[in-house]
Amino acid sequence: MDQTAPKWIAAMKLLATSILQRYQNRFWLIIVGAVLSIPTSIWGYNSFMYKWAKQESNCVTGYYQNVARLADKPFRLEDTLNKTDSEFKDCLSSVDPTKSNYIFIRDEAKRIRSKQ
Image (tube, rainbow, N blue to C red; front, side, top):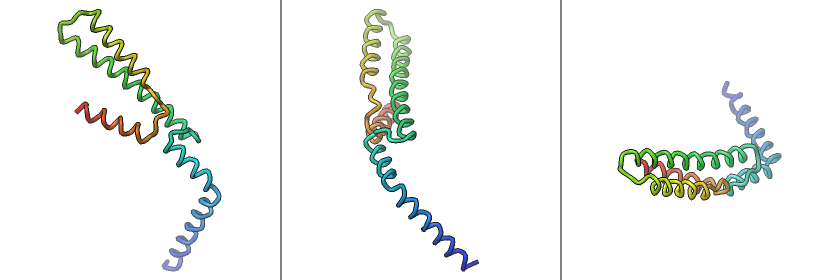
């Protein structure tokens, strides 16, 4: 049993190095794409679409939270709806799925912390 373990480890090292040598350029392309938020694979495209959908759902959630907050207070309907509507439009115009993953995660963490 002791003699098969080093052969198994050697085989895994050989496999890993051969895969890395074969797909080295693709590996770096995926890494650069993830950092710069350029979809270079199906995973990058999924990340791109997730960031877009998440930012838009944040806008919709914020809109409904504002409307729910207004239900508790006396208000002039026209003024508050105009304000809420303009905030919603500003939020939708600021949606940017091309922002880097680091900035997206940082912004989401700030948003979650501000809710608590």
